[in-house]
Amino acid sequence: MKDLLIFDMDGVLTDVSNSYREAVVLCVQHFTGQRVSRELIQEYKNQGGWNNDWDLSQQIAADLGVPVPHSTIVAKFNEFFLGDNGNGLITRETWFPEPGLLERLADRYQIGLFTGRLKYEADISLNRFAPSMTFDPMICAEHVARAKPSPEGLHTISARFPGRRLLYVGDTIDDARSAAGAGVPFIGIAAASHSRRADILALFAAEGAVAVIENINEIESVL
Ligand SMILES: [Mg+2]
Image (cartoon, rainbow, N blue to C red):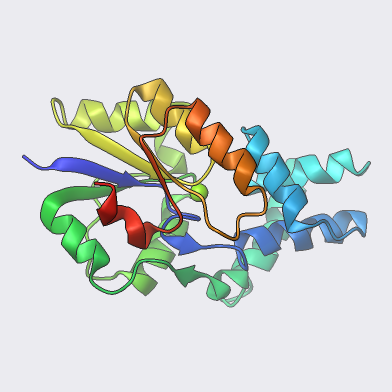
């Protein structure tokens, strides 16, 4: 029986700095007229609780003095992110794993996903970048009642694969807290270019991360 190696998606497998993060910037700018920095977005992410970029966009706009109904935020965000025919910012996303990495990991581990994305959003990227890979389990936004930092998604996986060892790989404090809450060893990813790198390293350490790497391509050195 292989151990389960579970990945968060954004910032771990996919580089979303020009997709989700830019969609937050454009969405906030649309409603407030202000163009917020990536650093500010990272500060919110480091506070924890802002895994959902719709909620985050709504909160930043509100903090800038412009309350916007949630459904209005979601519609505008998706206009930027998905575009009319899938031609939005999502097309600017790139894939971190080098060719062969996931295949080698899949030889040693059963690989799965626990992401805050809805499944159709996750599938868009998986079909584009890793069509031959199987991610099982795949726990997405609609599969949990409570989003990260709740450990619910990891508990769901443990229940589905009783007795199997789990590892979780993520890039935010909510990922680390979810793993800590579930008693699952956590490997943190903190990119060299991370705008609040010292903060995230301290946060990962506080949550008991078993290892921290700069990029998913370094993961074999800590397994
Ligand atoms: Mg992430």
